[in-house]
Length: 419
Image (cartoon, rainbow, N blue to C red; front, side, top):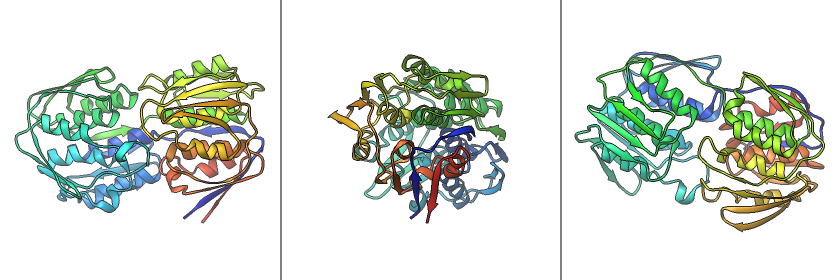
């Protein structure tokens, strides 16, 4: 398995381009199953999870033509109702194929979705199953897989007991082609949801309220496909901004929308990180002193759980104590033990809260990336650490960051990928 070798304390500067949003690309690909027409997806990130999603389309009988950061997908000949374990086990977003497959083929079988280790009990899919049942599907749970059939699906009223991005997107897509009116309440409000709804509406769907807590879907008989451009990845934008701040570097981030990380930029103003933001760029200025600031993760537009890990690294360099409170996922602070091994002064209060005392000098260490977002945080820690750091299991990082080592090298980082 490949690994990164990183030598810290290198001066970074220059420009880095943000890729298409992973969390949107992994939703628009299964949305291709809703129509028998060809869809062209542009600004598609070249990452492992996207490759898996496109491979899953092909195993179902679809046709995929790849280009430079784009793909054409045709699904008129899909026939396979069983999602293969070898693919589903590798990425969490495979759950997004369930609803569209159910609508197109009348049934779907699949094992429990895989992906990162975060979340209690492997990140349960209860919300999805409850939603499908509410819409009239018949759900059968066996030891090794789930089997869902379209008994008599009709629009319904569904309340999300827990706000869920993928849950909102999944039921919204499924209800698009179900007779009657579906109302989804306590929905997530991420910008990727609003963009997905706008695309579906442009192809004939009737969705209103996306981007608010209540979404209403009037079922239609069919929709078209057309063309879709993936928006810039706001999590990658924030990750690069935190990398620049932690390494005290002057870095210009392009092909991004700074408005979608407003919460992080408002914190930067409080802790002394100077920056310039434009309509499609963000430039972080080199800083000398960082003030501590406590955060509590929250659904959009609050502080993203996916930026919690790199922000924690930044706070190891702040002048004082800060509390990191993770409210979205269980087990998402376990990775900070590796940061402590590098010299960070971190106190674990409980599974959801830590106190970070800074500033501390970090030292190179041999580490293993437990998940995607902790992986980018460990890279940032390695870039500011004294000495050499080895990061194993970088497959987890490749799942969400396109050719990250090459892009960091262009900024001056001493990073090597070793097979």
